[in-house]
Length: 618
Image 1: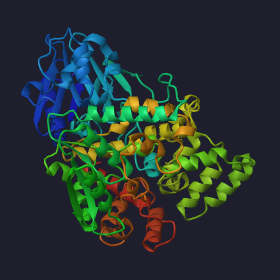
Image 2 (image 1 turned 90 degrees about the horizontal axis):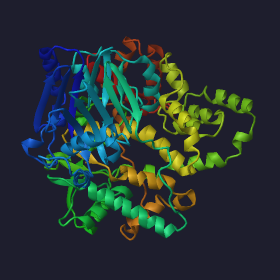
Image 3 (image 1 turned 60 degrees about the vertical axis):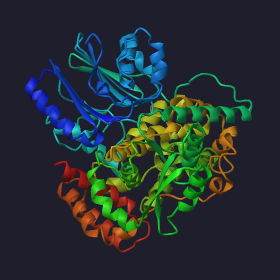
């Protein structure tokens, strides 16, 4: 796990070195163990390293092949590097690192090397003979890769938006077309970002930059069929799920440094810890954040699992005020503005302070195994007769609901007024923190279809070949999961130089679970298929416990301790002409007065956006 940065194009060597140094300085938190650079004709590559596999200096980056033709930098881990190394017998390896395996694979397979990699990664490889840059990103989009073309002959790329801005080659200008997306979904969805001209390399794709042109190609798509499986025997399906998940965890336990696991006491993290314990010859280091307030605290469950699997458990006891005190540091860690992620920042900081460099997470279990209420709602909508009503009547009802001050009714109206009950029209409504109608009132430039709507519409034909539950899983993985959960996990864990690995996002497991029919996967209790696949691993107290979210008293804070802070940030967005001052003032007053349906979540991601803009000098 590291931070990478680079510039390719006709740039003076001294100028390139200066700009690259500024980019790497911005990435220091991601890789405190080492820094490496290579500057040659038409190229500047740099990396900040967090040493995880092969801790020797020989494994530092940029790394070159024996002939000096290829130079590679990477952010992430290749979990199957040992198997690949055995297959690449003709290459003369000089280190024990996974990065050198990438070099060997690229030398043999070229751009198709990514098809052989199982991991989370963003990679850049410079070919000195062809004056060509190859960049690639992992299948599920776990690790970020941002890029921009400031002119027709230059490409700037790296692990963070802030790093690209530090190059001095990117104009600090907000992409106004991305604002509506951010207002509605608390994040800008790939391939766009909040910065005009800065893009994200799509998950499961690679790009080749040569002669001033960047061509991008997908090597894996989540909506494509991935082989034929026999699902006639539910017991066999459960065994296969356990095999794939166990193999995924075993791969992610490969490390030359101490590793641990996040443990909330929920189903997903408990399964990860339980299977890790079966695979480990020593107690697993586990970490949880607990509260003195009974309604928020999950220590009863995390302690139960820690005792059951004899883990070396570390419990961090915090009050809501502790979170409030950490807020300035958390906000300073924001690379891409978001309305979420404080929980990841806190637990990552505590885990790293305990001497852990790598932590496994249960992120992804809800998405793969229908753990959210959205899955039940989706099935009901698809089976509903409501869409048999005339479209004009449904649209009229939607217009009436849009007049309400309660944003909840706006989304209900959007649902009723949807043209048809299909994934590209229904799923985005599940994940809105602000309705389209409300976003347009905040910002008149908020219009047009969002990225997730367009993406799902383009994939609809392929998605509809899959079971209904899997259709929503795909929407979740390419939508909220990739663009909020994974992005936040990366930026807030790497703020403390902690590598987080997510076993549920192993592409082989994902491919298999997506193909499972609904009649096997549909749960009568939360994530039934997953629980039964690993049974009797978990006690009933965990399986049937009440699901608890990570709840903090934002509603109260933003009316008291954070009121002035929030008001000043909201005012700055109005002063910049981004939001309509009159409407902001009315909604904020309604929130302060406790008006029903005007919630803190409507404002917090706007406050974060304003804070991010100030910190990054927009």
